[in-house]
Length: 213
Image (cartoon, rainbow, N blue to C red; front, side, top):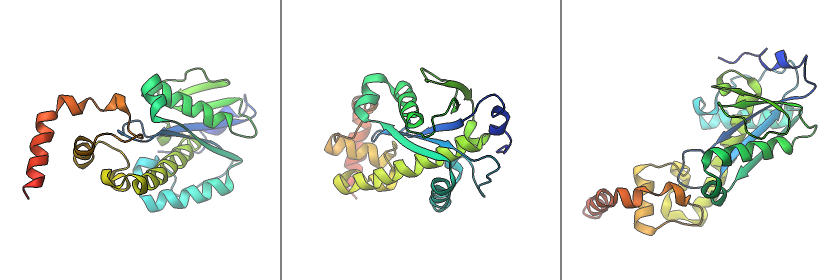
């Protein structure tokens, strides 16, 4: 449950406190996107929660409210190529650092969702399950999720054969089968596609079953 005093407890020691979170660590395709938010003291956003617990409609409503009322907000990403080069953990950290760096004013303290805070240019605290505890982290998670989902809907227009609009790049049965049928597109994370070899026989059987319908 969100604690609306959680972020404020750090403001006695730090002038500008921001929260950051990412969306898209698990998908086979698309970037990992991070949000970063500085919320005004005392602001309460009705219905705010971990973005994964919210409906799309609620996320969109909160996105509009957060971007209107935040002192500062930003989104940034790490590309599929960067995910392949650095690995998903390091790419997620990179995206969060980029989002924090885009804030104005610059934060001197960051609340970071998860158990890793790596190479942040300001004081930072890892908050495990932070999107269910910290309002600024929860707000950042909404910005990241909405932004990434919108990007995948756009990618669906470029690569309609993969169904990005439906599954947002996550490894659903239909998505894995589409990658097996058509091969990866430039937005796929090559380091996430080991199933193409590992599950080749299973995918072939699935394709044959689909074709036989």
